[in-house]
Length: 262
Image (cartoon, rainbow, N blue to C red):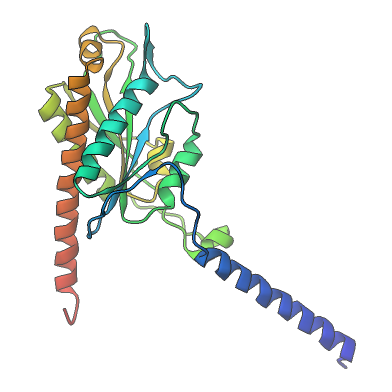
C-alpha cells in the first residue's frame, strides 16, 4: 500500500529528473561566449561558410627546427596569410592559435567542433631521417569521430561506433589541396595519405594536414624561409578550399533536386 510519504518521495524523484532534463536543454541552447581567436568576414551561403586554420605547434613546442628556423614560426606565418586570402573570398576564419602559444591537440579539435559548415586545415612542415627527403604531402584521416547529438553528449555510451572504411569528404579535400600546392609551388609531389593524426581524426568536419616541405632538406628550406614561397603555399590552399567548396555546393544542389517533391 502506497503511503503519502512514498508518493511524496516519488514526486520529488520525478521533479528532480524533470529539473535535470530542463537544465540539459537550457545548457544546449545557451549561446556560447565568443572567442578572441575568431576572425570573421562577411560569410557566404552554402555548404561551407568557414575554415578553421590550425598553425601546427607553438609555445614550448617548436616542432621541426633547423638552426634558427622553427616550424612553429613558419606554420603561423602561413596560417595568417591563408586567413587574409580566405576572408577576401568571404569565408569566416578561425585560427586555433593567434601567436606563439601552446595549444593542446584536444583544444584545437574542440575549437573546430564548436563550429558548423566548416573545413579544417592544419599546417605543418616536415623533417626527414635523410637529408634527401623533399616535397609536400597532404594527410587525411581514414576515419573521423562523428558529430555527437544532444543525447550522446550527455550519455556517451549511446554514441555509435563508426566502421566507415573511407572518409571521402576529407580524402577529396586532401586531393584538391595536394594538387593545388604542387602546381603552384613546383615542389615534389609526395601525394595524399590516410593517417590517424589526432587533429584530423577528432574533427567532425572535412579535415586535412598539409606538410609544406622539409626543414631538413637544403633546397626545401631555402624556399620555406622566403615570404614568396609561403604566400604561394597559402594561395594554393585557399584555391583548393574554394574549388572543394564549389564541388560540395554542386553535390548538395544535386541531392536536393533528387529529393521527392523538389
